[in-house]
Image (cartoon, rainbow, N blue to C red; front, side, top):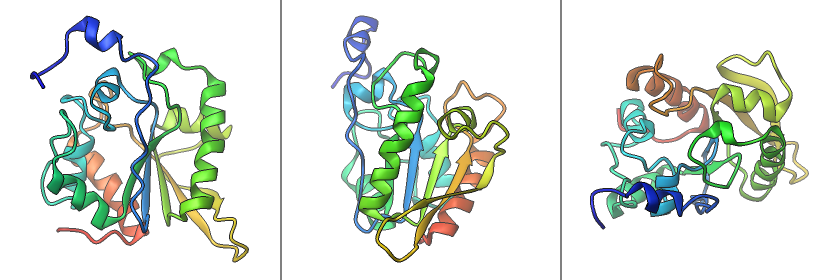
Length: 199
């Protein structure tokens, strides 16, 4: 693949979806807002070269190095995520140029889909990346960054549930966050989920 996409090529990816990454066992499920056009083009979450998700994972010790997902997952990067039990999904599945193109109902519907994923795969922690989207999806307008009171039931009759974190989105547009601050927040969720860390 070439180093990037033309504007016309990117626009052709509008409305496409990206497959969920769901390793087994699933310990930690990261939930983004929705795929970028670039992510839709390569079929991998958070794939845009300017997105800080994978640098933040490395800073958190969730991965041993920064995964370059801009052209798809390299095998060693994907295997690290799978070994750690780290999954990725989104509240809204359709790719857009900007998240503000989404409406509130898409976030509400997305939370229902994430609840279904929790009942199917039983993650220990679900980390929503984007406090604004989390507030809309849950109706909790006063939610702050960090672990939430909300729990997502596993639905297996044991009373077990996933702990929920609402954390900053790694988009480069979220200028008041750094890779280091994102890494600290993501590490907290990973520790709660029992993800084996590299440092």
